[in-house]
Amino acid sequence: MYTEWTPDMSFGIGEIDVQHRKMVRKINEISEAIDKSLSHEEIIEAIKYFEAYSEEHFRTEEGYMTMYKYPDYPEHKKTHEMIMKDTAEIRERFSDGKADAREVYAESRKIAEWFVNHMKTTDTRLAGFLRGKVK
Image (cartoon, rainbow, N blue to C red):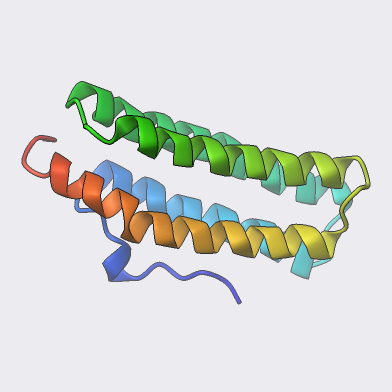
């Protein structure tokens, strides 16, 4: 089961909402690559693309947090670092043959779950702080 974007995932800041939607698509692309039995290399590429896009998105959010002196920045940044670490670990394990496609699929679903929860909790607090500040 893939993650679908729903209106309650909206951040209320256009740039971040666009990035969040794209991240949901990129997470789903990892699962889809496995469902379609794509090659080992294609699955790795899907993971790498998610990692690269996540990094870009997190830089955007963190840029807003530092610009507007968000008080929970250190804790929020740690959650970003944690998911990047987890994603890199499953990619490395899969690349090295220490994890199979089923494990990557399960991990991609856990990442999707984490991301939806992160948007609805941690990012919602950030959105409340940024509303009215970001033009």
